[in-house]
Length: 129
Image 1 (tube, rainbow, N blue to C red):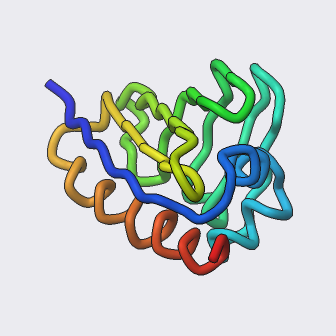
Image 2 (tube, helix red, strand yellow; image 1 turned 30 degrees about the vertical axis):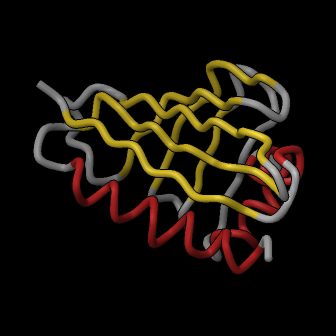
């Protein structure tokens, strides 16, 4: 059995702004503080977190959802890829971003949950203020 997690945060900008930044190498790098090479195309590969994260875009719903195959350098070679779903919901005064990460190797879920908070949501709060 694998681990899964869900975290979310609200931002004072439209969903379009965060969705666009997530899929733009320069903006992704700026919002996380780590070198990132991302794609805005289905089937496009990405590398983020100074190479810590790699994967591929499975589905992109403009300004609403990003679904990716995702793995970190901590995954064993025998581990299957995990699944990342990032939802962007327009709310009064901005956007709510919800990150759902599943199929994480057993025992690693809590570390990744904290990682999403520390390396994405908190830096994004500063970037999109």
